Image (spheres, rainbow, N blue to C red):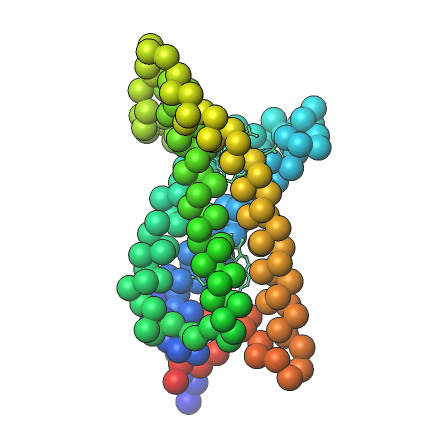
Length: 186
Ligand code: HEM
Ligand code: HEM
């Protein structure tokens, strides 16, 4: 008799559950849009793609910060149920991704606040415009770190995807099925 798969799978030692997978793949899509916007700004500022993508960079980036906080809380709460890291390097790599996913939008928002300009992502008034002076250390820190850390995050993502594909070779632990919900729970 065929067994039906529950649509809401919890995290388990052999695969990530539905909520973890939604966070992972939903945010991967979000980061693809963020980096596409940044890359077109860098390489093709006159293009229609840039006109389309750049206006969403700041509101989507702000949403990504909220999502990474929720995702980190979820992963900490379910740390014991989730698949174990295959290597210490994988644990450190994932930690670095989390740190950068939070730091990159955080320094941008700090710069935004320091500039004194109002900011209402998705129409939600997050920061009121101020008439007093700019807060120099915030604008300077943001300008110094946002771009470089953003590119470091992109490099880490490329490395992360490369490692996930590398581990698909025979003789290695293929970790992709756990993020696709394919492995059976123990
Ligand atoms: C998930 C988060 C984010 C990522 C991965 C990201 C990534 C990047 C990257 C790679 C650049 C290009 C830097 C360069 O041209 O050298 C950039 C530029 C920029 N980002 Fe973001 N960003 C994020 C969130 C935000 C947020 C939340 C804001 C504002 C509230 C923001 C505002 C800007 C601005 C104004 C620029 C152009 C000025 C600059 O180069 O710093 N970003 N971003
Ligand atoms: C095509 C793109 C991607 C692929 C194929 C992929 C693949 C995977 C796989 C197979 C795992 C499980 C690894 C393990 O358990 O050892 C994983 C976990 C993870 N991935 Fe990705 N990934 C992609 C994009 C991204 C992006 C864009 C980010 C963040 C910027 C990211 C962040 C993470 C993190 C933090 C984990 C640890 C589990 C968690 O807490 O969600 N991944 N990824």
